[in-house]
Length: 113
Image (tube, rainbow, N blue to C red; front, side, top):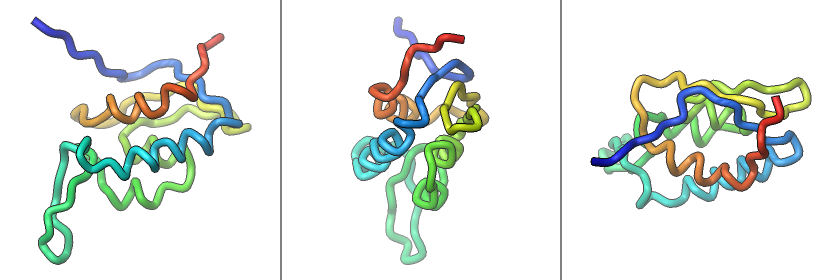
């Protein structure tokens, strides 16, 4: 018997000073097609892998950490200075979120709230 754990809502602190590096880590992750479990066909009908239950165009267009979290179906809770202090999962199904949070783990600080 195994267990599956998913982050639905929680305190996740990523300081504003780490937001760009966290975004870059997700961009690096996005280059790893072998980890992606979703797929669709492009305009030329070529099969293209993507993160499960996401829209690749939204991920590619993301300019900020908040944008890319939304593209992965997490609504970020942000301080005015850009510090991330929480997330809420707003999708219907979990997808490749383990890879997302593994990439973000080095930037997460313990919550003090």
